[in-house]
Amino acid sequence: MECPLPLGDPQKAGDNVDPWTHELSCVYARSEQGTPSGQAKAAYCLFAHHTFRGNHGLSITTSPEIAADIVASGALEDMEDSWDWERRIFTPGPVVTDKGPSYAVKDLPGRGKGVIAQRTIRQGEILMLDHPAVLVASDFSSQMQPEMRETFFRRALSQLPRDTQKRLVNLARSDGADPLTPVYDIVTTNTCGVFLGDNVAHIGLFPEVSRLNHACKPNAFFRFSQRTLTMQVIAYRDIHAGEEITINYAPLGMPHKVRKKYLFDNYGFHCRCSLCQSSPEDRAISDARRMRIVEVRGNMRKAHEKGKLSDAITYAEELLSLSEAEGLTPLMHEYHEILASIYLEQLDIPNARKYGQMTLDGWIRFKSVDSFHVEAVRGFMRQIDHVEEMLRETKGVYS
Image (cartoon, rainbow, N blue to C red; front, side, top):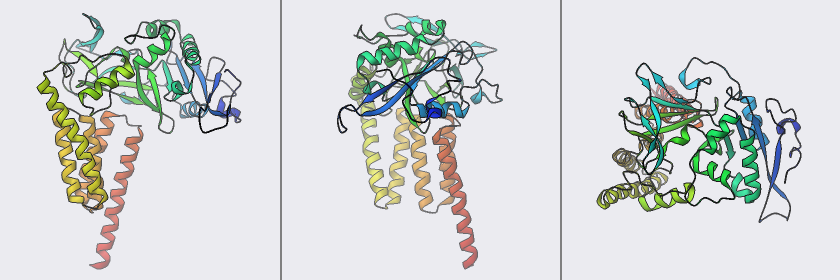
């Protein structure tokens, strides 16, 4: 159901549509259970910025509050900043150096298209830059009837520049896609998870990033900046010319059968990456490590809750070893953070600071400098300094 601006605060809902370039369309999600029939559960609006980042364009389906936060943060503004991670003005696509572009999109026999490295890409190097064309609140689809959902997604695409529309409709479709909801299928098959506002989950459709295929042991990862609405793809490891560049679509740590079902249910394809097509023995070794990670996580949590800090540290160190062996590098920063916290509880300031700094460095590398993870760890590092100062003062009193 389309309706006027849905919330009582006209400023929050965008009474003045600037910087939005189209009239707002809004819809209420109806509660199925737990509230009286017909009572509005949530409101979503379609916000469009036709000239976002030049001729790229942006359509956002989200709450008026999130849209207001995006405008207030200055994320829609074009500006030239001095640091690579702050850069907003660029042509989405490969990063070009004196050795040429980082990659090219090529046809892969029997697999559609893929992103192929055109030169050596070093570990930690940014190889791709992109802007979102579509952003959607993660819970929007589940709250809408299929017809309304498809109508909203069609309208979101129609409000983008024509060149961007063409790029999106040529993206991959899922196996067995519903012909009645083609735009919904394109969106759900090609999106990445991002956070907007106060850590609110959304999905984002990035035309260039969408060309990256999945692998359960990828050689690249992506990070998103709320402050600039910029997506970067970075090499996990050295990537050689001619090698396909891949990212992971599934949550880290899933064993093979669970991962396979997740990918089909959420992205509509059967994974044929090197790990999934490896020998049963190799898959069994990988699954054993991943299941051990789950087990050790639980043991570590219980030990921590019971105050057995030495045992918790031992489990955390085992998690680091397992994650490194399995190539689950991002998980290691979570375990560094746990170790830092435990050492601080023990008033072991040197180790707390050591692992705290490793956590901070890791989150900056794998997320972005403005992510909530980074801000939280910076707060933790200040807490370490505060505890150290208190210990000094206490020692001075009793010396």
